[in-house]
Image 1 (cartoon, helix red, strand yellow):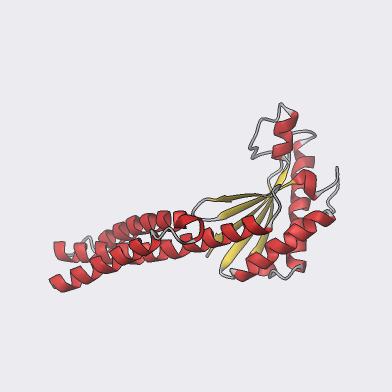
Image 2 (cartoon, rainbow, N blue to C red):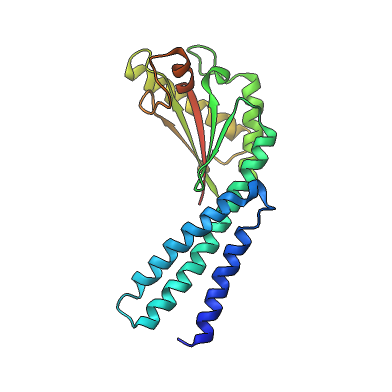
Length: 218
């Protein structure tokens, strides 16, 4: 490989990383930076493996090219998540939790504001939040959405699983009625199997009763 080609690939990778490190973007582009680094690492490894039987020069070229492509893809996904997170924080109420993992957004709606006791009917206030969430999902069409229902451990495991499934489906229905394509949404019931707090306390059980909307770029 000619030296000038190596230089061009290095420059492409460097430009992608510098762009991702621009802190003037949403949330300081934190996840764009993280995505660029992860993407570069994965891309470089893929490039080396794809050229493992070639010459040393080919392996270097594969690593650099893979890093540049991976960094670009990771930065794009990270920037999208940063932007969507910032918009949702401004639009949704303070009771709605938002976590940006760098690979997806997890929007958590406490079950106690979504539903009345033993009910699967979504409250009016929560329907407004879900309409806002649906609008955001439609603004970023190249994503998939998992709606995951969770409960505390009060009652039988079978009852809790069924309730979590029906509540996930109820939230999915609101999103679909607000314009999100059904093909993009999957409803999942987890029952009491994935607690985020201790079920031995009232406060912990309250945290465990929730529905999570997981938005993942394709």
